[in-house]
Image 1 (cartoon, rainbow, N blue to C red):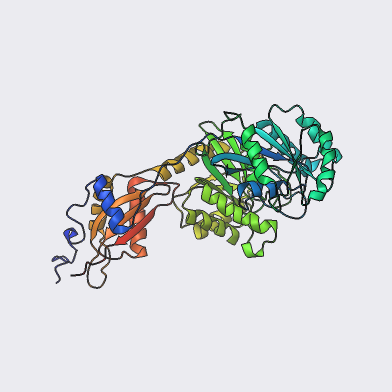
Image 2 (image 1 turned 60 degrees about the vertical axis):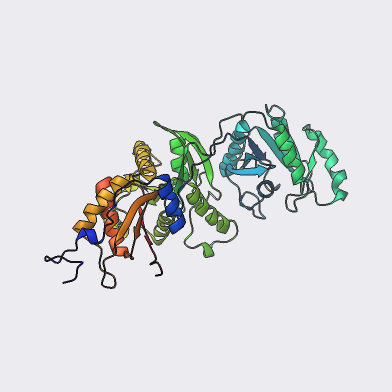
Length: 484
């Protein structure tokens, strides 16, 4: 019998546990880890109060193109037909070292109804919360009736208003700009958002117009960020509107109404939250066209930027391949997670049995996720969402001390040691929780631990410490043998 097994055939824990297993690390220990294993600890987040500039105008004057020009990257969804931007969306921009919010809006028209009327109300709300307003007009078209109505509305604004004449592609158009003085908003700024002409001058003017303090609190790292994600028409916008108590997202019976992400600060019973409504993901990105393709990419970005995801599934339909794909994106991003089954008001006894079977077959790999059955339409069980989000985020942020972790790991590995590799049992030199958000447990070993054994460790870890609502990652760093 080898030295790695005793008379009972059970490995001695001293063979695969370091004698100093369980000691907390000093700063010099961390520096040694970073040097030897190429590992870095997490860094704190930055909190800022930022001013907001809101871009308004009638449909198809180039607002989203101007937003992208201000940002220096393609963020806002742009298409050659009007009405692509349906909600108000905020992005962080940086100009001359000063950071600020740029808020894009849907086209404003005072005489429309239905979904377009809802877009107009979104623009009006955005104008009420801005520190600076940029009204965009079309140099090639001139003043329209809608432009005139909007300008009269902005005459009463309590914040600076900057008039931008977009699509100014040639000096020959200076004569066309003269008529914009009739709007009563001062000098029009000639800009070509498509080609970048005049954008820097407008940005300088925006910064000069900002107040010393933002009109409303605007903190980049403050309220916890919640992403509403799921396939199209699952009820994400309806849920946001219900919990916000206002028509924050545009809702229509047609699937895919939301194209850009929509962010909204919502005060629930316990905390202020930042909810982000996302476009439903199509079956495959390559099957999407035009603005739908960019919207699907934007949804991925929203998941990455969120802290907790409310993953919404239509309880009246079978769990689909699309649902699985969205779930995979959330898990890959390592976000805290709450499983939300919507449209529970449509549930029947037969469908209830089928759904339980779907969950057992297709969602068995996430037993650590809390589940809530709601109806965004009727408001059923919405009060359960906040406690589940709080629990998921608390665990997403939670840290286990190195001493606790190694004491647990000593007992767990003694009970069920790792399988042998090449005639030897991998020995653990030390273990630590390397980071939070999500929790990452790093085992520094002399040999590889296979995926099955890491799943076993994760299961035992959850039994000991909980961590409901968050993924837990078990990482292995193998120390290379030193050359003799």
